[in-house]
Amino acid sequence: MQSSQANCGASPFKELDLHKIKVSCSNCSLSELCLPRGMGQGALEKLEDIVKRSSPLQKGEVLFRAGDKFRGIYAVRSGLVKVFATADDGEEQIIGFFLPGEMLGLDAIDSQVHACNAVALETSTYCAVPFSELSEVCKEIPELQNQLFKIMSRELSVENQMLLTLGKKNSEEKVATFLLTISSRYHQLGFSAKEFKLTMSRQEIGNYLGITFETVSRVFGRLQRNGIIKVNRKAINILDMVALKNLVSGCDN
Amino acid sequence: MQSSQANCGASPFKELDLHKIKVSCSNCSLSELCLPRGMGQGALEKLEDIVKRSSPLQKGEVLFRAGDKFRGIYAVRSGLVKVFATADDGEEQIIGFFLPGEMLGLDAIDSQVHACNAVALETSTYCAVPFSELSEVCKEIPELQNQLFKIMSRELSVENQMLLTLGKKNSEEKVATFLLTISSRYHQLGFSAKEFKLTMSRQEIGNYLGITFETVSRVFGRLQRNGIIKVNRKAINILDMVALKNLVSGCDN
DNA sequence: CGCGTCGTTGAAGCCGCTCAATAGATGTGG
DNA sequence: CCACATCTATTGAGCGGCTTCAACGACGCG
Image (cartoon, rainbow over all chains, first blue to last red; front, side):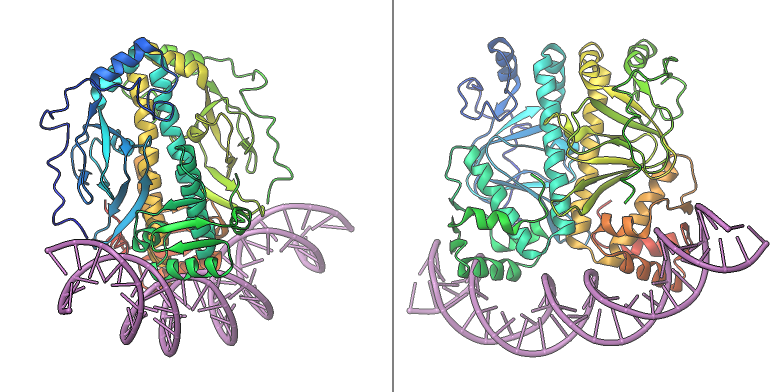
């Protein structure tokens, strides 16, 4: 666990952080994936007024903790963030890994308290959007309101898929599904769909998929022996995309 | 499977249904759980103008199917609705059971196509809210917009909990968690938290929890032998609520 | 270089699955 | 009202996939 060094002093909601330089959603390469999608220039400027950009987070630093008061939602700008719940016994269950352009913290809008923790898995930056202000701007800008509905809706779809994966698939199908999902999301960001680096550890992959890290390791080994992927520590190379997709029987997309 | 008889002719989005009698959210006993929560009288009337009430659905009849174009979201008024995804092999994965006051279909807002099926498990009624119109009304009524954000957020929280349950718990903990969740939701509706009827079959409970129906049956038997619950077919009686809660180690609420 | 972390691999055990038989509940038609 | 068919639930026996426990190897960092 990296919780010892992890301090939440970086939260741009609390101390007014230094980055008062105007956030520019307009120039952001992620604008078509993120909150600004589908908004006109005038609307964008109102959004930019309330969005706060974070200073870089180091590996292990937290965006928010379970129990923290909900202040707003977050968009990953760069890096990788994991979100996890902590059970009574202290064990964690990873809810998701968040790549650039993806939003987190949405589940706390209702309760106004974060039930999960968010931690950077590598050096990362993010934008923070105070929810009370966002809610106000949504009243003025219908496109923004609709985009937020869509983002939450998509997150629900993703979790539905994950319920299917956890409930119906065996370890091999789980790992294959995981690789395909990561591949597709990297691809959407303009990276290679076949070669990428898994920042998260085997432990974290297994935790996310509801299996042990030994099993993850064994499945990786088997897939490699079958010529479907090539694994070198964190580096993954998908050699036979078709075969990988065929492994995933229970996926309906 | 009940798919043979199940026909979707009842959809109040398609044929203008007979129920042109004004929907009265104001008088609805569920208004404090449902969409109207926190809205003033004037706002309520605008909402009532667009909500359509369904005629009763019989057991096995569908609200919507995977592949259907998304028209709007649904609120259960009475009865019980199950939502499930269908995998390639035809096997279903139940995503959730929806009680009165709970909303479904939210995951299709983004894609505009339903990825899941919704079927009544007993005689049920519901309200349908065309989304394009709802979205318009949200612009005028900020409380409604916020309530919709909250409802989607709560759904995300529920699914996060479910990910934890599926990923970390053994069969006994899963069943105990399931009973406690159902109990709590019935209680919130004004029913007994200790005695209730499980409308869904063992098969469906198992499917939802990622275990077989035989295992569900065995766990029920074990809990009964331990004096924690009393089971008589579909009727459940929680004899020792504290013991039941103690079984659920990994739940953080 | 030595230490700690992470990943791989092996061996044994267990939880939940599969297969199967039975009983109870429900529905139907004569 | 009963005989029969069907579906659901319960219970048992054996098996298998994943976990657990353990040892070892590979990096990376001081």
